[in-house]
Image 1 (spheres, rainbow, N blue to C red):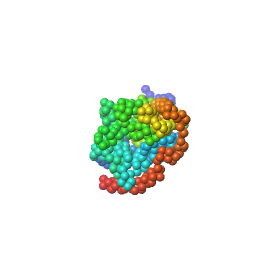
Image 2 (image 1 turned 120 degrees about the horizontal axis):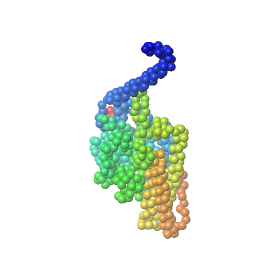
Image 3 (image 1 turned 90 degrees about the vertical axis):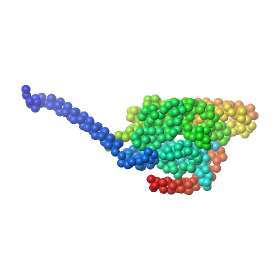
Image 4 (image 1 turned 135 degrees about the horizontal axis):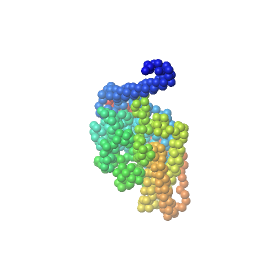
Length: 499
């Protein structure tokens, strides 16, 4: 038999075939070696801590020494340049954009000041820099409870561990102002020893327990949404659980739909405030993003919040979660297009089209509600009694609850456009029915003409219409920012130096 070398000389095609096979084998061996090295590098990275820190370490920069890639991406939450068609990452005065909101929230803090929240880096700064906290100056107390700090950063689980949740909730907003200094970050979502996702606030755990569930049974994929659900949910302050304490509570006992939570609030006769014009017992939706998300197609297919808002990225042989928690529209290639193989421009146009249609109906509901509040005030001013107004006010309460639920869900038109549209449409029906009852009542009271609609085309005009003193609010806010906040900052710096 001839040697292989002579066979190859006589059959060049066989030589080329052997050459190509060798190339393919070498290529796949290279991929295998690269994968092994990458996994080894990941293992070295994941299990080579540079510093040790306590269980309740609140400083994100300290965690960042062990997880530099995640920390560097987290720091991008301070970026405010991204703007979509509706909102974005920058500061927006929503009362300037839509002055009708002032009237809808008349008698409540949101009528004074409501800015779109920026990234997690600004959670504390944006909470301080708002008139809703009451700007406690000259010894005055804020009208807001200390519970309002609950979602603002990793100092919260630290303080809850030290004093207990109920004691943390006790008191008014300024009592813990010098303690909450580290913005939302690592310890809010991760166990410091295992780095597993965990729930750092009791409200979500307690809500699960009341409905017969154990949050410890949640899968890792479910936890990639549940850590977000600690804060991006509907909640209220339960003043009956612990005497004198506004205890943070999720109204999930009857279910997580808009109607189930409405029923919960109605049964306990809870209201956030009494409307200044209509005197309706109102509900203020917080930000039920998780509840709306659960009704959408992504949730039904097992897609978590983190899959879209914190997608995986690779860098230098390392695969890690992008902690630049942001709109997927600012990272379409690594979030949306992992599953949706569409042209970027077409994809964005599709999203905006959904938003346009939903906001068109939401705006219609807003106008109906403004008219309902004004007409209700007119009825009171002209002799209406409580028995005549009771069903009308409940209708206004339920219609505005649906409007606020859809508006405050932040991304509801993307997370679950069908459910969001349904909620708004039922709100329109209820608002119209309430106005029909008002029209009949006004007729009985001898008033058959249309009630004039006020000129509330600007924030200032709307605030003047409901009786707010804009100059005093601005003066109080100025003192608070220039005097109180620097004092808090000084205390925080002294505490930081003592770590």
